[in-house]
Length: 276
Image (cartoon, rainbow, N blue to C red; front, side, top):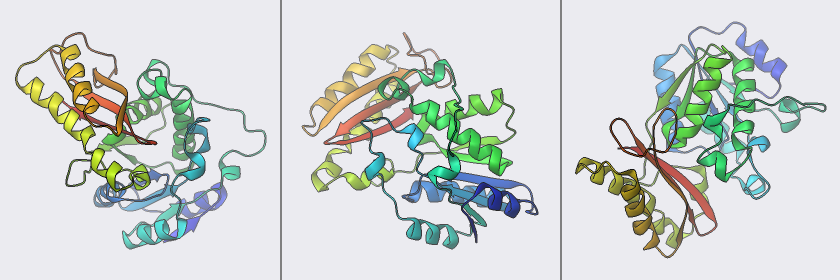
Protein backbone atom coordinates (compact mmCIF):
# COMPACT_ATOMS: atom_id res chain seq x y z
CA UNK A 1 0.00 0.00 0.00
CA UNK A 2 1.30 3.41 -0.96
CA UNK A 3 0.93 6.07 1.74
CA UNK A 4 0.94 9.73 0.70
CA UNK A 5 0.84 12.63 3.14
CA UNK A 6 0.92 15.52 0.67
CA UNK A 7 -1.34 16.53 -2.19
CA UNK A 8 1.58 16.35 -4.61
CA UNK A 9 2.61 12.81 -3.68
CA UNK A 10 -1.01 11.61 -3.72
CA UNK A 11 -1.58 13.03 -7.18
CA UNK A 12 1.65 11.49 -8.40
CA UNK A 13 0.63 8.09 -7.04
CA UNK A 14 -2.77 8.39 -8.73
CA UNK A 15 -1.40 9.17 -12.19
CA UNK A 16 -1.10 5.60 -13.42
CA UNK A 17 -3.76 3.74 -11.42
CA UNK A 18 -6.27 1.47 -13.11
CA UNK A 19 -9.83 2.73 -13.33
CA UNK A 20 -12.43 2.69 -11.98
CA UNK A 21 -11.04 4.23 -8.79
CA UNK A 22 -12.99 3.88 -5.57
CA UNK A 23 -12.43 6.21 -2.62
CA UNK A 24 -13.36 5.91 1.06
CA UNK A 25 -12.79 9.15 3.04
CA UNK A 26 -12.47 8.60 6.80
CA UNK A 27 -11.43 10.41 9.96
CA UNK A 28 -9.72 7.27 11.24
CA UNK A 29 -10.77 5.35 14.33
CA UNK A 30 -11.62 2.59 11.88
CA UNK A 31 -14.39 0.12 12.79
CA UNK A 32 -16.71 -2.36 11.11
CA UNK A 33 -18.71 0.42 9.50
CA UNK A 34 -15.62 1.67 7.69
CA UNK A 35 -14.65 -1.88 6.73
CA UNK A 36 -18.04 -2.39 5.08
CA UNK A 37 -17.39 0.70 2.94
CA UNK A 38 -13.88 -0.49 2.07
CA UNK A 39 -14.99 -4.00 1.14
CA UNK A 40 -17.79 -2.81 -1.09
CA UNK A 41 -15.50 -0.27 -2.77
CA UNK A 42 -12.93 -2.99 -3.33
CA UNK A 43 -15.51 -5.25 -5.02
CA UNK A 44 -16.70 -2.50 -7.34
CA UNK A 45 -13.41 -0.89 -8.43
CA UNK A 46 -10.04 -1.78 -9.90
CA UNK A 47 -8.13 0.51 -7.53
CA UNK A 48 -9.04 1.58 -4.01
CA UNK A 49 -7.94 4.72 -2.17
CA UNK A 50 -8.79 5.81 1.35
CA UNK A 51 -8.02 8.89 3.40
CA UNK A 52 -7.46 9.45 7.11
CA UNK A 53 -7.91 13.06 8.16
CA UNK A 54 -9.56 14.41 11.30
CA UNK A 55 -11.02 17.56 9.83
CA UNK A 56 -10.94 20.48 12.29
CA UNK A 57 -13.26 22.56 10.11
CA UNK A 58 -16.28 20.38 10.92
CA UNK A 59 -15.86 20.58 14.70
CA UNK A 60 -17.38 23.43 16.67
CA UNK A 61 -15.94 25.03 19.82
CA UNK A 62 -17.87 22.62 22.06
CA UNK A 63 -17.13 19.53 19.96
CA UNK A 64 -14.61 16.78 20.63
CA UNK A 65 -11.84 17.57 18.12
CA UNK A 66 -9.03 17.33 20.67
CA UNK A 67 -10.20 13.97 22.00
CA UNK A 68 -11.43 12.37 18.76
CA UNK A 69 -9.97 8.83 18.48
CA UNK A 70 -6.63 8.81 16.63
CA UNK A 71 -4.36 5.82 15.99
CA UNK A 72 -2.69 6.27 12.62
CA UNK A 73 -0.47 3.18 12.98
CA UNK A 74 -3.41 0.90 13.70
CA UNK A 75 -5.61 2.49 11.02
CA UNK A 76 -2.95 2.14 8.32
CA UNK A 77 -2.41 -1.50 9.28
CA UNK A 78 -6.15 -2.10 8.88
CA UNK A 79 -6.22 -0.41 5.48
CA UNK A 80 -3.29 -2.49 4.30
CA UNK A 81 -4.85 -5.71 5.58
CA UNK A 82 -8.03 -4.84 3.68
CA UNK A 83 -6.14 -4.43 0.42
CA UNK A 84 -6.35 -0.66 0.05
CA UNK A 85 -3.95 0.48 -2.68
CA UNK A 86 -3.45 4.13 -1.70
CA UNK A 87 -3.80 5.88 1.65
CA UNK A 88 -3.91 9.66 1.85
CA UNK A 89 -2.92 10.96 5.30
CA UNK A 90 -2.52 14.74 5.05
CA UNK A 91 -1.73 17.04 7.94
CA UNK A 92 -3.98 19.93 8.87
CA UNK A 93 -1.43 22.32 7.37
CA UNK A 94 -1.46 20.38 4.10
CA UNK A 95 -5.23 20.61 3.78
CA UNK A 96 -5.55 24.15 5.15
CA UNK A 97 -2.27 25.94 4.42
CA UNK A 98 -1.54 29.49 5.51
CA UNK A 99 -3.87 31.88 3.71
CA UNK A 100 -6.58 29.30 3.09
CA UNK A 101 -9.78 31.30 2.78
CA UNK A 102 -12.34 29.30 0.78
CA UNK A 103 -15.44 27.54 2.13
CA UNK A 104 -18.14 25.43 0.50
CA UNK A 105 -21.75 26.02 1.59
CA UNK A 106 -24.64 23.72 0.69
CA UNK A 107 -27.74 25.83 1.34
CA UNK A 108 -30.85 24.66 3.14
CA UNK A 109 -29.80 21.02 3.41
CA UNK A 110 -27.10 22.11 5.85
CA UNK A 111 -29.34 24.19 8.12
CA UNK A 112 -31.56 21.56 9.76
CA UNK A 113 -30.91 18.61 12.10
CA UNK A 114 -27.14 18.34 12.61
CA UNK A 115 -26.64 21.74 11.00
CA UNK A 116 -29.00 23.37 13.48
CA UNK A 117 -27.36 21.69 16.47
CA UNK A 118 -23.82 22.18 15.17
CA UNK A 119 -23.66 25.49 13.23
CA UNK A 120 -20.93 25.45 10.60
CA UNK A 121 -20.53 21.67 10.73
CA UNK A 122 -21.60 21.04 7.15
CA UNK A 123 -19.59 23.95 5.83
CA UNK A 124 -16.57 22.08 7.19
CA UNK A 125 -17.77 18.74 5.82
CA UNK A 126 -18.54 20.11 2.35
CA UNK A 127 -15.23 21.97 2.16
CA UNK A 128 -13.08 18.99 3.08
CA UNK A 129 -15.00 16.52 0.93
CA UNK A 130 -14.82 18.91 -2.02
CA UNK A 131 -11.06 19.15 -1.52
CA UNK A 132 -10.64 15.39 -1.19
CA UNK A 133 -12.69 14.64 -4.29
CA UNK A 134 -10.75 17.28 -6.22
CA UNK A 135 -7.43 15.76 -5.13
CA UNK A 136 -8.29 12.08 -5.60
CA UNK A 137 -10.70 12.38 -8.56
CA UNK A 138 -12.39 9.03 -7.86
CA UNK A 139 -15.01 7.40 -10.02
CA UNK A 140 -16.95 6.42 -6.90
CA UNK A 141 -16.86 7.74 -3.32
CA UNK A 142 -18.35 5.72 -0.47
CA UNK A 143 -20.22 7.01 2.58
CA UNK A 144 -22.23 5.28 5.29
CA UNK A 145 -25.94 5.85 5.77
CA UNK A 146 -25.51 6.38 9.53
CA UNK A 147 -24.51 9.96 8.67
CA UNK A 148 -27.59 10.40 6.50
CA UNK A 149 -27.59 14.19 6.34
CA UNK A 150 -23.93 14.14 5.37
CA UNK A 151 -24.69 11.86 2.42
CA UNK A 152 -27.51 14.16 1.26
CA UNK A 153 -25.26 17.23 1.53
CA UNK A 154 -22.36 15.52 -0.27
CA UNK A 155 -24.61 14.29 -3.08
CA UNK A 156 -25.99 17.79 -3.64
CA UNK A 157 -22.53 19.38 -3.57
CA UNK A 158 -21.07 16.79 -5.93
CA UNK A 159 -23.89 17.31 -8.42
CA UNK A 160 -23.94 21.10 -8.15
CA UNK A 161 -20.16 21.46 -8.56
CA UNK A 162 -19.84 18.75 -11.24
CA UNK A 163 -17.18 16.93 -9.23
CA UNK A 164 -17.72 13.79 -11.27
CA UNK A 165 -17.74 11.11 -8.57
CA UNK A 166 -20.68 8.79 -8.04
CA UNK A 167 -21.63 9.03 -4.36
CA UNK A 168 -22.38 5.51 -3.11
CA UNK A 169 -24.26 5.22 0.19
CA UNK A 170 -23.98 1.91 2.05
CA UNK A 171 -26.25 0.53 4.80
CA UNK A 172 -25.55 1.28 8.45
CA UNK A 173 -23.53 -1.45 10.16
CA UNK A 174 -24.79 -2.25 13.64
CA UNK A 175 -23.64 -4.04 16.75
CA UNK A 176 -25.77 -6.98 18.04
CA UNK A 177 -28.04 -4.71 20.12
CA UNK A 178 -28.62 -2.39 17.16
CA UNK A 179 -26.24 0.43 18.09
CA UNK A 180 -24.64 1.81 14.94
CA UNK A 181 -20.88 1.45 14.78
CA UNK A 182 -19.24 4.83 15.41
CA UNK A 183 -15.78 5.99 16.41
CA UNK A 184 -17.44 7.86 19.27
CA UNK A 185 -18.75 4.62 20.80
CA UNK A 186 -15.25 4.27 22.25
CA UNK A 187 -16.06 7.13 24.65
CA UNK A 188 -18.83 5.14 26.37
CA UNK A 189 -18.26 3.39 29.69
CA UNK A 190 -20.06 0.04 30.21
CA UNK A 191 -23.21 1.59 31.70
CA UNK A 192 -23.37 4.21 28.96
CA UNK A 193 -22.78 1.57 26.30
CA UNK A 194 -25.77 -0.39 27.58
CA UNK A 195 -27.87 2.78 27.68
CA UNK A 196 -26.93 3.66 24.10
CA UNK A 197 -29.10 0.82 22.81
CA UNK A 198 -32.04 3.19 23.36
CA UNK A 199 -31.25 4.98 20.08
CA UNK A 200 -32.04 1.94 17.97
CA UNK A 201 -35.00 1.04 20.15
CA UNK A 202 -36.47 4.49 19.48
CA UNK A 203 -35.94 4.12 15.74
CA UNK A 204 -37.51 0.67 15.76
CA UNK A 205 -40.47 2.15 17.62
CA UNK A 206 -40.88 4.69 14.82
CA UNK A 207 -40.75 1.93 12.21
CA UNK A 208 -43.28 -0.17 14.15
CA UNK A 209 -45.73 2.69 14.45
CA UNK A 210 -45.45 3.45 10.76
CA UNK A 211 -45.95 -0.23 10.00
CA UNK A 212 -49.15 -0.12 12.07
CA UNK A 213 -50.41 2.66 9.83
CA UNK A 214 -49.56 5.72 11.91
CA UNK A 215 -49.12 8.63 9.50
CA UNK A 216 -48.80 11.45 12.04
CA UNK A 217 -45.10 12.32 12.45
CA UNK A 218 -45.85 14.26 15.65
CA UNK A 219 -47.13 11.12 17.35
CA UNK A 220 -44.10 9.14 16.18
CA UNK A 221 -41.71 11.79 17.48
CA UNK A 222 -43.52 11.91 20.82
CA UNK A 223 -43.35 8.13 21.24
CA UNK A 224 -39.65 8.14 20.41
CA UNK A 225 -38.98 10.89 22.94
CA UNK A 226 -40.99 9.09 25.64
CA UNK A 227 -38.97 5.93 25.16
CA UNK A 228 -35.66 7.79 25.32
CA UNK A 229 -36.79 9.68 28.43
CA UNK A 230 -37.09 6.37 30.28
CA UNK A 231 -33.32 5.91 29.99
CA UNK A 232 -31.70 7.98 32.80
CA UNK A 233 -28.36 8.34 31.02
CA UNK A 234 -29.92 9.63 27.77
CA UNK A 235 -30.89 13.17 26.80
CA UNK A 236 -32.49 14.08 23.47
CA UNK A 237 -30.87 16.70 21.25
CA UNK A 238 -33.38 16.23 18.43
CA UNK A 239 -35.85 13.70 17.07
CA UNK A 240 -36.98 14.02 13.47
CA UNK A 241 -39.36 12.46 10.97
CA UNK A 242 -38.48 13.97 7.63
CA UNK A 243 -38.41 13.60 3.88
CA UNK A 244 -35.27 11.56 3.07
CA UNK A 245 -34.20 13.83 0.22
CA UNK A 246 -35.10 17.37 1.31
CA UNK A 247 -34.74 16.58 5.06
CA UNK A 248 -37.79 18.78 5.69
CA UNK A 249 -39.93 17.76 8.65
CA UNK A 250 -43.15 16.06 7.55
CA UNK A 251 -46.66 17.09 8.59
CA UNK A 252 -48.03 13.74 7.45
CA UNK A 253 -46.43 10.60 6.05
CA UNK A 254 -47.74 9.69 2.61
CA UNK A 255 -44.51 8.47 1.05
CA UNK A 256 -40.89 7.76 1.96
CA UNK A 257 -39.79 9.03 5.38
CA UNK A 258 -36.77 8.77 7.61
CA UNK A 259 -36.68 8.89 11.39
CA UNK A 260 -33.45 10.33 12.77
CA UNK A 261 -32.16 11.43 16.13
CA UNK A 262 -29.25 12.81 18.08
CA UNK A 263 -29.00 11.73 21.70
CA UNK A 264 -26.53 12.49 24.45
CA UNK A 265 -25.44 9.41 26.37
CA UNK A 266 -23.59 10.94 29.27
CA UNK A 267 -21.11 13.30 27.62
CA UNK A 268 -21.16 11.49 24.27
CA UNK A 269 -23.43 12.62 21.46
CA UNK A 270 -24.60 9.86 19.11
CA UNK A 271 -26.68 10.01 15.93
CA UNK A 272 -28.62 7.43 13.96
CA UNK A 273 -31.51 7.09 11.50
CA UNK A 274 -33.84 4.54 9.96
CA UNK A 275 -36.17 4.53 6.98
CA UNK A 276 -39.78 4.10 8.09
